[in-house]
Image: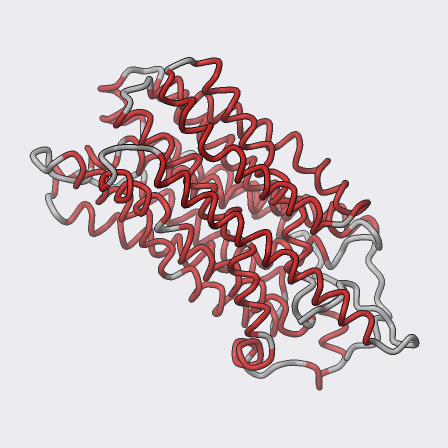
Length: 447
């Protein structure tokens, strides 16, 4: 193992946190823009007008789901590059891919213009997005955590997660703004603007990332060539497959659950309950803003009391609030709907900041990018991409009732509590088994 002689530079730690925040904000903005559009506009723009409403909704969410199919591949490919070449170069590539694909979506022809070619082109660009985001999260987490000062890794790691909040805020805010021009204008051209605007954000993100130094862990791995893995994914699957599996289920609510309380909730509210589209978008925007405010504080708390305790408390909160959130939608009360949206987003914010550091602790430095990317992206494939589709299908089988999606959210959260506990126990056992003279890894590994 490397000798850990390189210590994080405080100035580079701040730059790394900013780079993680800026890059993930832009990439998640692009990703959430697609999720929002799939919920409210893609069914009318990219599919035949005479298609049954339920089938159009399922097809629109299906285009959203296909982006998750290649996320594990993106995690493997970019994890390999990140572990062998460096975190920084990999993050520049993923940002460019995501930005180009998103801009191109804003230029796509509609079904009325080119027929079946329209959804095909949409799916192709969605697959490119999936590969790019597959390699983004792991690198952003590591560039922040591995550069963080001792005792503040959960807090600094939260900046990569904070990008999800910023991206969601910008995305839902952009769609809310475009909605002000009226439904016809929104369907005609308004939905394209958020995708086209991503070009400006990508340019800003590239400037920040190009100037960033790589993490000290990469310097150590390069100095000790014997510690490099020729094929990181093979080593992860051979030696740390249990950590990957537990990590997948620990992340289920933070990924799939998020789309249940955003994309599916939006579709359920507008399509089944006939609530105002603008009202719900405004509520999701407020919830994203709350998430942005509280995530750093909850991550800071994780450094003080234990990251696993904060995550478990957040998952327990999701179990409690899952059914009441859908019940509030049925009342039609704007105040109650907003209150439950904010309450749910608060408890889910407890998952986003600390989980990055928890998962990073699960893998050795020379395969860490691959390990955390594989866990996160397999989780997204299983629980993220298909969560809205599963919710629509289950609710339809139950006659439109909300309880199947609510139960689904409660079950994956309960499983997540157990898996988060297992990750913590594994860390404690490994640290107890270490020789007292062993030097600490900048991010302690568990398996």
